[in-house]
Each structure stands twice: as C-alpha cells, then as structure tokens.
Image (cartoon, rainbow, N blue to C red; front, side, top):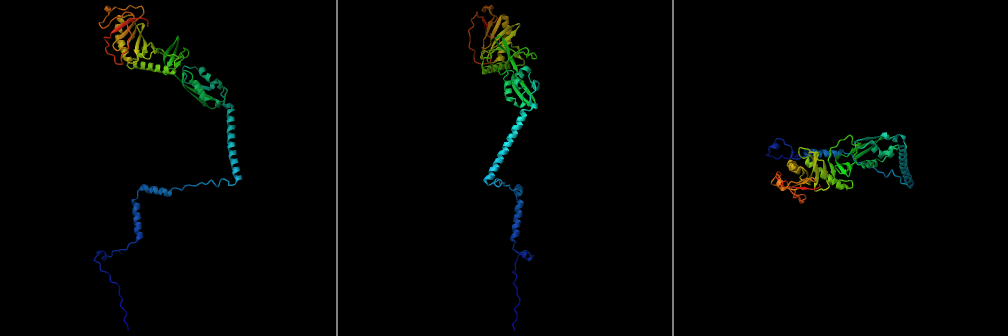
Length: 375
C-alpha cells in the first residue's frame, strides 16, 4: 500500500523588511487607479481661466446652418413664378410710396398759409421784411417742397448775415435763426460811411437799422468794396493787430483814435485828437504801443515849441519828423529850445528809410526835424 504524498506548500520567503512583517500591501498596483489619480491632480493644478474657457466651449451652442436651396423651386416654371412674385412685391412697395408722397404733397394741412407762419430769430440790424423777401415765393406752398438749402444760401448772401439756419416745423411753419456779423469799425468810401467786420465784409449803415445800437469806432480809410476780398481781410488783420497792440496796456488807447489810414500796409497812420485839433501820427508797421508812448511823452514839449504841429512821424529809431500846418511859421535854429533839436526850413526835411525793427532808443532827447507842407 502506497503512502499518499504529504501536502506541501511553497515556503514563504523570509524578508528582512519590517513592512512585510507588518502586513504591508503587495507591490502590485492597479493601473486604472493610478491613471485616475494623475488625472485628478492635473485637474487640480489647471488654471481657472482655462477651465472656464473649456467649460464655455463645451456649453456654447453649435452654429445653425441655414440651407436656402430647398426654398428655391428647382423647376423652371417655379423659378419664373417666384421671380414674378418678387418683382410684383417691389412694384407694390414703390406704388404705395408714390401714393403716400402724392397724398402728402397735396395735403392742404401742409401748405404755408401766410408770412406769419415764418418765425425769425436773431435779427438785430436786418428787418423782418428784408428777410421775408427771401421766402416770398414760399407762401401758399407745400412745406415739404421748400428748398431749405437754397433758402439758407440766399440768407447768407446778405452782407449782415454770417450764418443762417432754416428748419421745417410740421405741419406748416418755418423757423429761421440768424447770426449777424459784428462790426468793428466805420469805413469811409468817398462821401459814404459804412461798417466793416473783422473779415473785411462791408456792412450797410443806416440810422434806421442801427437806431438801437450806438457805436464808437474809428473811421477807416484804405478799404473799398472794389478791393478783392483777400486784400480787405489782410488789411483788417493789420488793423486788429494795431488796435490790439495799443490796448495791450491798462488803457483802451484804441478808443482815442479818430481815423486810421490803412492804405499803406507798411505805414499805418492814425489821427489823434488833441485840444480841439487833430494830429496825424505815422506808426509804421510794428512797435505800435512803444511809439504811441513816445508820442504821448514828448507831445507837450512839441506843442509848446510848435503850436501849429500837424503831423508826427514816429517810424524812425532815433529821429522824429514834425510837420507843421500850412502857413505856419517855423522857428529858426537859434530859437530852438533844445540843443539836440534843429529847426528846418520848409520842405528841407528829406525822406529817410526807416531803420531796422528794434526797440526805440533815447526818448527824452530825440532830434526833431520840423517841416511845413500839406499833409
């Protein structure tokens, strides 16, 4: 009788590591669990903005595709009927628009009844009758047919009008807003006196239109309606620079000017009143305030020596040329009051070229060369 072999099992290897001794888990790892762990860690480290963008892309709706091919008939007859229907619709719209337009143009409620339906604001010098003359043919006319741009251009062609605005007010009124020009001086043209603005535009002057306004301007000469617009603009710029330089100080000297001659742009001449008379002063084209101050400072002395003083030429750096009134006697050299002043015989003062544009030098001891002759 054979003996059954004894049951044996593999001997457990002896491991010195204490981990195995304490029942540690085996070395085998589940790959699915490991991949899940790594994915969770990557999601935790992901940027929040990237996560929101990704969620937005996931939640955004997909684009809707519209196919028009199925709405267009495929047969020739169907396409013809579709085209006819399309153009018939357009014709209906055009017909409806024309009927509505005709109804508006023939609507009695849109007809301007009288000139009282035209409102005007901003006119101070121009009368209402002068402005209504532009709209004379628009009375009893449909409001929608009034050419506003043409009427505005006609208004702005009037000398006093600088800018105009024309508006329709339903059902049958027109509103006009006027901005008038601002005069800055009088202008003498022969025997007539008119006004002029800063741009050289000549304005009609009549006591009726300006009865509500009082002006205190000097009278300009050297500006005419026959001059080109560019010439008038340039001379008015010179005049404004002249008065602006004089008024740069604390006193408004330009108010003392009686007349200003702009004929020669290189020599502005101004007529200044003095003790019941007027003296013509040559200012040149620069240093206006400095030359005026020199004139005022020396005028009492000049008047004491030359009572018939009529003109003073201040254009020279260290010299002043005095001109007497016609028929006035000129003191001889021995009667001159100052050692630096010499009297000249009539007509002896020769013309001099103005020196370079520099500040004036001596002011109290200016050589004076008087002469006699017409201004």
